[in-house]
Amino acid sequence: MLNVADIFFTAFNLGCALAPNLDALIVMRLLSGIGGSACLTIGSGMISDIYIPEQRGLAMAIYSVGILFGPILGPVLGGFIAQRAGWRWCFWVVFIVSAAITGALIVFNQETNPVVLIEKKTKRLRKELDRPELQNIYTHEKTTKHSPSAILLQGLIRPFKMLFRSPIVFLLSLYVAFVFGLLYLLFTTITGVYIQTYGWSPELCGLAFLGMGTGNFIGVIIVARTSDATIVRLAKRNKGVYEPEMRLPTTVFFGMLIPISFFWYGWATKAQVHWIVPIIGLIPFGTGLIGVLVPIQTYLIDAFPMYAASAIAAATTFRCLFGAVLPLAAPKMYDQLGLGWGNSLLGFIAVAMIPFPAFIFKYGGMIRKRWPIQL
Image (cartoon, rainbow, N blue to C red; front, top):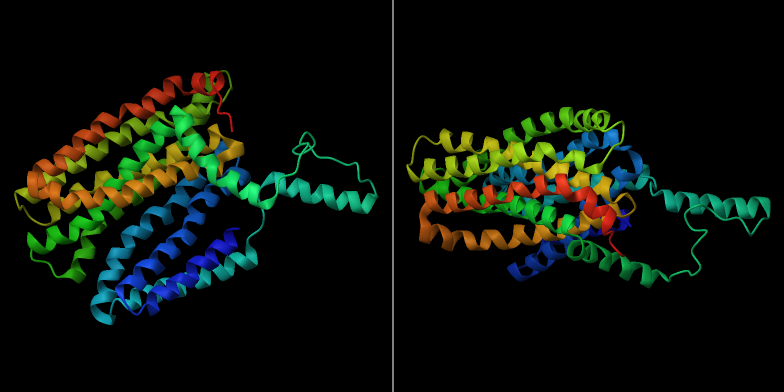
């Protein structure tokens, strides 16, 4: 499935590079996005398959580097490529890189889902030992077999069931979606701010994203060093019993960094202080983004291990929706409120959402055990 989606993504990036007009480009971008969505969900599920809980924090931190550094490196490199070689070369570069990576994945990638692996082994032993009655621990209680279309439909519906039937998934997905929406809002507005306020050329505006990139780098280091260590320490205090909610305490601290950045960045650009000041102000946001996204995604994997990909798909769907819609409101908001109060409004909303992971940390275990999701 992942290989098919990667090929789909690569093919339609080629279509973007060759698009004859804007309408075709939009369609090609839509289709390439559909293909690229598989890595965002299946990749997290693979981490659940491969790593034990005490190792998932580091694995998720490394995995998130691509998710977050890609959108930041894109404007930096894309500005220079588009200015010097033309916009089509932005897509040619993406196509070349994605084709190389897809080829490597097809050659080296292996199945990680334990249900699929054990089922394959069971079928092989039935044939080798001539014992058609052999069953395995995952499927021996299943009395009916579903058709491929039914399995596909179930896979499409399950993330939405988890999103709207579980307050845990909904609240944490809403928080991640809002923070992710802020990221894309900055992607769509920073260039305009630096052109109009500081007189930068379009190709140089990509460098303004280095503040967020620096913050991401700091966040990855901190999360990689603390996430797994935190759950080990808290499990020892809990008589050696690990609970998935132990992933969440650090998100409260990281969540505080996000409004700090928006107050800083908003009023610095409003006052038109030196250009380096707003860039420095975005460093806490980059750090906070990693510190919120990675522990929450790891928590969803730990809390719903059999449906990790569906839980991540629910969060990803929500965050992509916010990433598409929130930037559309930015121009009107900034026109009405200005850079100072416009960014402050976003900062106040970010403050209001800080208690979400704290609430799940305290009551999430009780909710999961008393009211399990019926899928």
